[in-house]
Image (tube, rainbow, N blue to C red; front, side, top):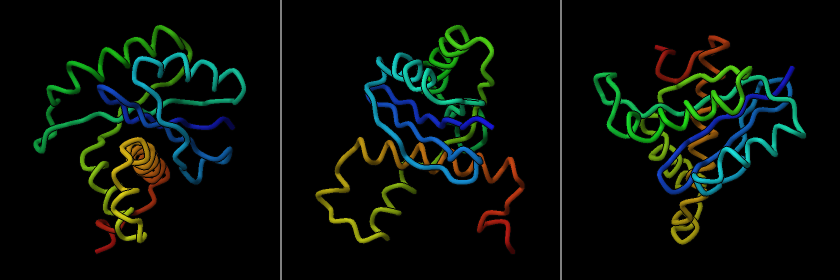
Length: 147
């Protein structure tokens, strides 16, 4: 079973997370300049088996595509599909992942100076996105669905 890569694509930086080989836990892996994301993925996948890529899809509150999705994320996804033609590439709603990442840092006791590291926020956002995707795949209920 290959790993799953989660990507929080941004205009400047891209957070990348990866699952363990059993696809149970997502961990933040790297933050790269967005222009280097495809080359970084190519190098990573040359050394690790990857089953699929999950790209964060920014949507509006009503579920419709956001301007960011149309302008930046969809062209990135199209490039990934060309570069890795046999790879499964899924989109997953990334709404609020950055806010959740900052909240997790605060709750974890991280000092304000360290929370200002945007690369760390991007990595953690990618991990939150990927963990949410894994939970959806396995049907694992999140906190909101336990009522």
